[in-house]
Length: 94
Figure 1 (cartoon, rainbow, N blue to C red):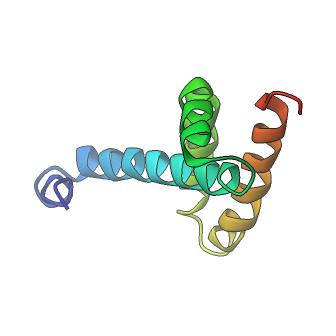
Figure 2 (figure 1 turned 90 degrees about the horizontal axis):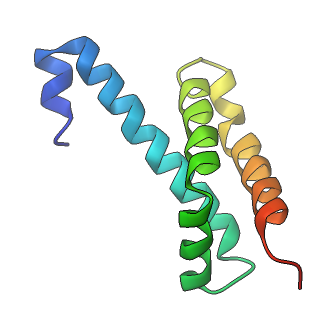
């Protein structure tokens, strides 16, 4: 809600700000959602902090995909699959 006035008064800056917010929300939300099914909440957050750059990279790609009509329907499926892959690639073996 704080970034919404930016969209009204400085549209290019506001659009980038909203895309960045979407990047963080999608990246963190999907990674922690996948990780918390396999480990405790504290361990999932620590792993997300350790893998912050790839999590935000995938979040940025998903946020960009969400802007394309039709392609945005695949964001939850592809995002969950990508975060599951990232989790299993980065989690310590049992």
